[in-house]
Every structure is written in C-alpha cells, then in structure tokens.
Length: 446
Image (cartoon, helix red, strand yellow):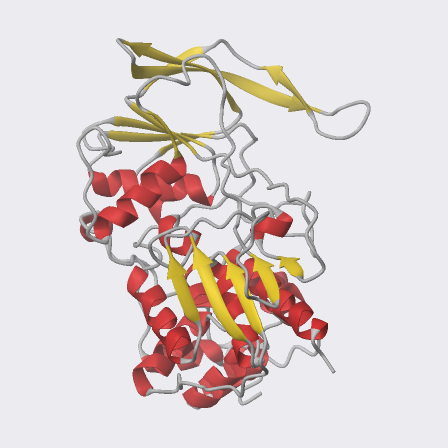
C-alpha cells in the first residue's frame, strides 16, 4: 500500500447529498461527488490490513485494496482495469450497492468508519468513461449461440461474460428497454437511466444483440440456440390480501416506481392510468429499500404527507449485538429519502384498507410486538395496543417479492439471478450472471 498509515490521520469523508430543498424538485441523482484530491485521499485510507475481508464479503470478489491503491496513486486507468476484472458494471454497483465490502472492512470493524469503497468504485467507473478507458472489445467467436431471457443485472452480466467468452449472444426482454429493476424499479434520483443506456451501447458495439418487447415463455424457448440463460427476476410482488384491497388508491410499489421512470423517459399516461402522490397523504407499507424509493418518489411528485410503517421492530442505531460480525449488521438505516421528510413507525400490523365510494381514505392498523416462539423458528406476533386509523389517500405495498417457481429445464438451460434465488441484491445478481455464463461455457469446453 502506498500509504499504510493514512487511516490514522485521514477521517472518512462521504460526498453526501444535494440539499433537500433542491433535490426534491427534480429526479436528478441525489448523491454528489468529491474532487479528485479528496477522492484519492479517501482511497489512501485502505490500509495494509493483512486479511482483506472485503474480498470475501463482496459477491463479485472485488479486489478493493488493489484498486484503492491504484486510485490513491492517481493511476485511474489501472484502477479501472483491476475493477473490471471482477465487476462488469461498476457504474451500477458504485451507485446502488449496499456495500457489503464496507461492512466487512477492518476499519469498519475496529473504528466504525469503513473505506468509502462504493463511492471510490463509482468515481473510477465515471473517470473510465470520461477518459476513454472503457474500450470496445471484439472477442473471437466460437460458433455457439446463447439466448439470455431477461435484461436485468443478472441477464446483462451473463450476456457480457458469454460475449467475452466468444458466444454469439441475444438478449430477450419483455420491456421496451434493458435494465430490469435497474430501469423500472430504481428511481432516477439513485440511478439515472443514461448510465444504463451508456453501458448497453458498449455491449451492443461489442456484439451483444438485444430484442425488446418479447415476453418469452420459459417452457417455449426460442429455437436456434445452443444454450439458454433464464434471468427473468422475481416479477411477482408480495401482496397484502386484507379487506379493502380492491379500493382505488392501493398499489404495489412497482406500479408507482416503474410508471414514474417511464414518464421520465417520455411516455404518457391518461389521468385514470397515472399513479401519483401529488397532494395526497401517502402511506408506504414496508420498511426496505423499495419502500424508501416510494418515499423519495412521492416527495418529488408533491405528496402532502408521507408515512412508512414496518411490521418488524425498529433496529438499533449503530450496532446490533444480535447480528455480530460476520453477519450483516441489522441496524437502523436512514436513506436520503427518509431525510426528505417521513413519519416512520415500527411494529405495526395492517388490518384493513378503508374507503368511501370505492376510494381509499385510510388504513386500519394495530401496534404489535414479537415474543419468542417456544418451538423455535419465527417469533410470535402479539397485540400491543388498540387498533387505529392512519389517514391515507394512496398506499404503496413494498413488502418484497415472491421466489418464482420454474419447470424442469433441459440440460442446456441455466437459471440465474433473482429468478434462481428469489429477490436479492443487484451485486449478487451480477455475480450469479457471471457464474451462469461460466456454467454455459463448461457445457462446450473441449
């Protein structure tokens, strides 16, 4: 390492977010960037820790110490080449990854201030595009054709690795553009869609073919291919089938998020079709990242008020003794969307959607608690207060997704990403796509 003692004198410094009063007026990315000097100084904090747990924690096996050292020395092209060896899309993960590597960073485990790996990764990727380190490769073809079904992060990863391995790759997707949940689930204020389009152009120039607007039945795969990769994600959201579910104003989270992203892309919707929080009291049910994305979107649409409820208990701040290393630390997360204004409540169970004339007017909920299950397993939910009504004109259900079920596929079909594991992280989907490509390559190894 160029400066193995920098962590002793250089504190962690994040780029931070644009001012709230400014960012809630548009859908531009909220995260700012550091100047070159500060960014390289942050990279210098990556010390010679001996056992770099970041390697192990990252599903992609990113070599953070190596590219952080190159970044610290100002060797940006070298840093990008090191990063690209393990991560085909650092511009995606550099924006939206929860940074498993940072929670495994020795500095985090000892001081609570990890190296800013995620931000460093994004800075390296952006410099690579800016200065032309992202070059077009033309692999030698092996004569085999592979169809990738689904253009989300797993499918894009599989397509990229298969293409570099010499396969002729065609990606099919039911939507009008590539990206999957990157495009239709994650708001522009976290990941602007120009970032996706830029990468797709590179893939196309390198020989990957994309066919949009085709919903492929996994049991009727297209003819003419030697192998298939199923990367269709988790299309079925978890619903809440309680009284009043049919009321106008109760929506799945993606009905809001996907439509808003399409509006920003230039599509139009009728007043009856439009899902908007403008001037409304908003209730988000679900305390994860998707719920947070609904909050930020509601603010930008002009919501009157936003409340988020979660059925699980409130996590502790900073440290959770129940999730010690090497577990992922379950601690309170306050996102940029939460900072913009939101009433947050935990241990709340939803009982009924209330309405008048077919339209939602409120939600009846009840405070609950959890007690240990004497037989083990999931704790038992118990009442902890009287039912109450939360006023709401519109509700967004952000409670996750159901793991898809698949038929028995032929030996030349590989399933990857959320389609295989159920809903997970983008970085895990990218890693799964890479592994799927390797499995296909082994099918035809001589």
